[in-house]
Image 1 (cartoon, helix red, strand yellow):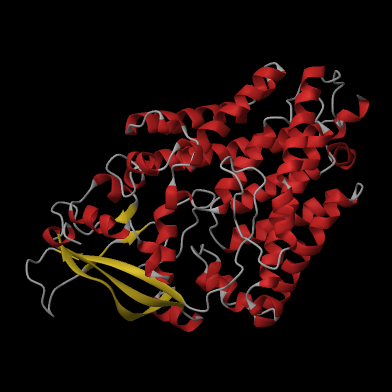
Image 2 (cartoon, rainbow, N blue to C red):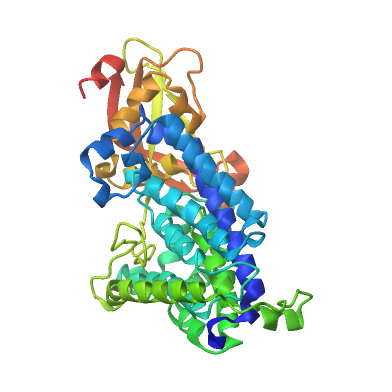
Length: 479
């Protein structure tokens, strides 16, 4: 079938696949580095405890058949190895059927992690990576022309990501409609980056322009993805530019980077090659019949699953970052339907004194990404995902997010647990564990230019209340 492939997108497909494999690689490395403390046999939310109460049909995962920390590490590092091989071009160096199997491996392995990841993996970009990875299985390799149907399915996916995010904003917080949300967002976002302080201090009229441009980029531009070229390529370029703006202004794991990757298949590679020194597509053989049948079947399958996400887009009760099936295929997306006006942070402290008095000296634990020391400039971690730091942001919003892992986290600090301490930036008790640990809630605000120059502080903070009273090893067992 001549219509089946679009060879003009040959280069776009290669760039998309290599970039997607790089995102997979980061996701697997993050899982390997953090799972033992969060999900391991002695972690805060152990996988064996989860699989004992949740059946396979509700959370498909290979860990239902066997779990050990060593096995999880093998799964994560195997996924990283396969992803690295794809980045290096392995999927383009093998026959089509082998390439598809190679792409299927990281999807299956990462889905197994996400489906037992519980609170630590409850973020929209996990489902986005899985849905994108599933479609990549059927996109072919350098030896075949890109299938038109899968290219359109990828546009449908990036459309839902952007358009869904735009709609959830217009239906949510009034500050999106009066163009004032960015008066607060850069300061109150989950994990500010090194430029967030500067973004926050941009003039308010420019913040209003930013919000207006965001509405255009998320509500108007995605529709243009379905128009003829070169308009669709221009629309993809606008999406890339707006996502890079978000990359500069904060840390959102791989959400922005993956959205950039998703926009790439909408770019006409042959058109780009006509104005830039890029390789043109080679002469490619016709796709084998079995491959055409598989792609047609997958397209019908995805179109069928699209009913609920499409209905969700037009619903007044739009769901944000929701999966309608256990395979995380054809999901609902969205981000920041509401914006916090104030930033609160839970500061965790310990002491080595046996008796707690008004004179007790408390020393603060430092986290890698979340704000703590007012003099510390926020760091850039994205696309790497610091899961503990992100959950600490939610805990500061509501104590409900602390259940059931926060007290076990404190218990681990009282033991100087190596796996937990690996997730932190500083441990004020490197030799002997603290006798007591407490947590306090602070209101954080970015300083102004004068205070930054005179004190070197990026943040000023004010104590709000006690979050967790001082607790010892003996008491934490009874908590």
